[in-house]
Amino acid sequence: MSPPCDTQAIFQAETDLGFPLPDLLREIYMTIANGGFGPGYGVMGLNGGFTDDLGDTVEKLYARYRTTIPDEPTWEWPEGWLPICHWGCVIYSAVDCLNSPYPVYFMDVSKKEPGESMESITYFHRPSLEKWLSDWMAGKNLWKEVWEK
Image 1 (cartoon, one colour):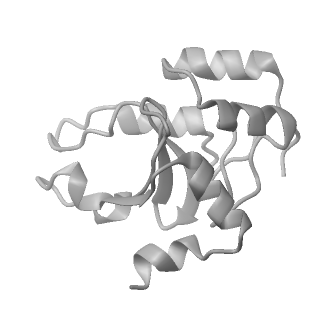
Image 2: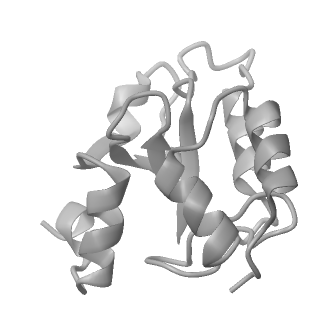
């Protein structure tokens, strides 16, 4: 686990992202850890915190995924969908930071085929970030629910 971050890191992340983090996520980053806990390979942190296997923080990965790809016109990562948890094989849980109560989705980037819509790689997972985290803490297998049906 990475140590908690300070309010300056939160301010910088929200400035870089262009939207505020959900209060719960902000509080976790500042009081528990700047990533490195949770399901899968762990919740990713803000700059200076826990990263995915490629060294990306949530801000860095969000910025990369929001970039358009000239030879893939159907690539359009949703605005405000912050990839927060890495599951391996380019699969992430993303929280919709623009719509309370902040639903969580699985995004299987590895399955994106040229010309297919982003919906083809998007799987609704939980109605809120709070529910996603509480189910993980209760020992529910978040991976199995989606991928091993």
